Length: 183
Image 1: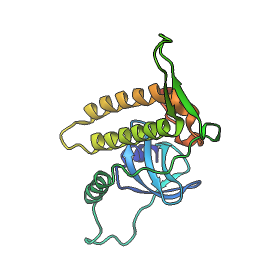
Image 2: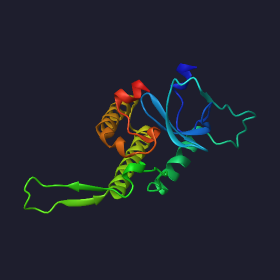
Image 3: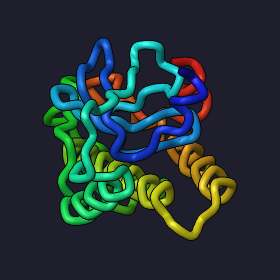
Image 4: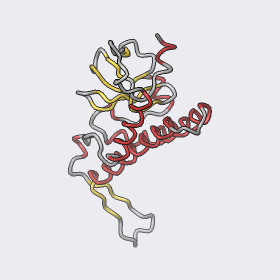
């Protein structure tokens, strides 16, 4: 099953023991980004034993091909690119302020509400995910190019792990290479 899972693409329907039914909306080097009906988008290791492909029975010519499904999903993602999942801020930061103090104390510091800063971090994360999906679906990039670009994105996620302290739910954290291997 492991070798089979490594070839699954965007649009593949899956069943997860813990999260239920979902569909692959992104493919990274070692994980799938799966949109679950009741749990939103989660990154799941490609070799997760709780993950099974849903094989449609009685397939007829009217059933969409994976390629058509990919096109439909990408069209939806582009149309709704700024629509993000609800990502809650950690309770201790609600109503908080971030203070940027210049070294020169004669200059005025900049105060930013934590909620606004957090919203920008979440938007950045979501746009990275869309970029990742566009790379994976790109028709002219070969697999080696896609993997190389994915490695840069993984490193970007790793650079952003500092901001995980702001997230209420650990499953919505940024994970770089080390985090992906540890989980």
